[in-house]
Figure: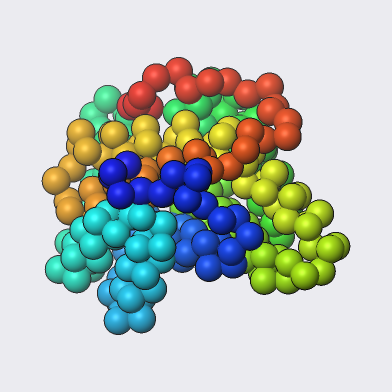
Length: 246
């Protein structure tokens, strides 16, 4: 992370704006790793989206990462991004591996299928706790980077709503529950996954959109993990076997 990023002492987790900013950046980074059709790219390039990303990033101390990301998006072409996306995530190499693997289980469970399936099941359980259901149009495994970023987007949005109702004592219990979900998702899934995937992207591509998206996602996850408490329970899951999944 940059030297301008927030520390845990800077964070007011009772502030709805803090959680709204988190949700906005999780939404933006998830959007960057969806297959880049023209509509998706237009939405990310829109004036409202750019303003929202930059304001949210400024609130979280990630302004430089966001500026790089929005600048890269401004110059992006959908057909070029589609080709790069396919080269990075869509086609195996001659050795049968993918240049960059967008699935958490490959990083945190290695190549053992049964262990990957347990990781996926854990993610599905977290998705259910925040009310997210798999989309019929999304044909990826549920431990895909987009799914896990969207999980945190929804949870952060829920935290913002709860924080806005802080005068209602019953909302404190809800806030604690959502915070526990976020902490588990971060510590057990995104924190050991997103930085490793970002490392692989930096080693593999010179596409500025994906490099900037990786930097922003990595900084966001590291910041968020640092300001969350340890999860209330830690499932018996594997530690990541190494930096890369390739």
